[in-house]
Length: 518
Image 1 (cartoon, rainbow, N blue to C red):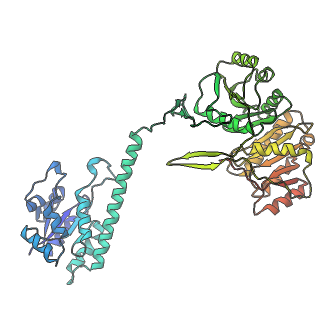
Image 2 (image 1 turned 120 degrees about the vertical axis):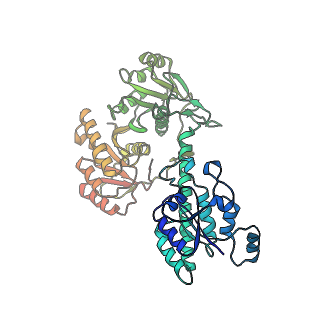
Image 3 (image 1 turned 180 degrees about the horizontal axis):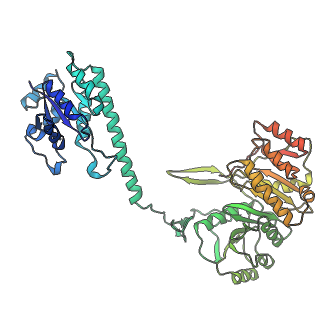
């Protein structure tokens, strides 16, 4: 009985020598297309698969080896009487060696480079590896020939190892094709935005965006139920910053307060006896960053408050309402400033669910409200009770800064109110937020306001949103004259930080409540 070996390869490396070896062992070589031509040019006698099956290639070569005679020859189980009888009746002789490697899809990805017949032949031969030798890697030609030359043939363990390599290769091939299709889908299918109010643009002008209000609407003051009284239409960034401003000022709902937001961070905030005084003090927190900012106020805007913004560029102003004189002044001031009226008073923050969208999923959590803060004095020195309001103000505002967050809260001379003297946020490490940003800004603001280091230090509380990992944070604060620190604690180096504070004469309190914001 003839023994057949089917060879159809894209990589022609060593294939002529391999085919010669098979012929020398008594195999008749079946082949197709370019492989058959290469073998003939190398002096190997070849039978075309089309002559073997009696069917010509069709569909421009897409169908060559997809024929029952080929696959029955590979898949028939030797020694199984039913298989052998069926194949003998149909003249489907066994094919004992299958040597195939696949179209070079990874090098030239396209529809026509997706191999169909090759993986089918390989998988069929690998499935029947107890009877068929399957070769997909030119590196295996020599050991296969040596095994076939042996008196007992190629060992079953070798056949199974060759089959395993086939499935590894076809799996990788399929993954590459799937990844290519996925990339095409992402590129060709423009993402569909949900139904909502179109915005000017997203975070950048080339990004589309919409505003989709919750149903039912929240009962408390919120942007979905607010009215835009004046100015340009809102963009994605305007909404994000205005929401950050609203959530920050909501913390200060029970007194006249103002929060200045830039890129989602409160760069200025203050409380005072009047709304105008609060806005003026909040602006001083960072006069450079306040340019082009979004501002939230805790009380309806009166004329005196509106006049604080004379000559100052603001993107948006959100408040519970606007008195007519204030509205007229602000509209005349700029045709572009967005005036957003909540049309309802602020109330204390309540725990609710908040979400953040990541690719393929939505993360939900409870809001950072009703925090279980404690007040544990951990140093020899103590923070005076009269600075507790400034410390509370600092904690509430620090919770709205991007981590790692450091905030210096400056109490008013009568110690009844407070404002941001300096802040650092969003840094990869806490000491940079402390030394390069918060302390530097606090020094600049103190000097601009004409405050001595001694006068400022006496009524300034430094707040951290999370524990200090190293004592270098305490040392940096001490070098800048800080006397009072509030932090959550909880580091394995807390004792080192406490010792550094004691050495510097700093009073430090642990709240045991972290306020990360990512």
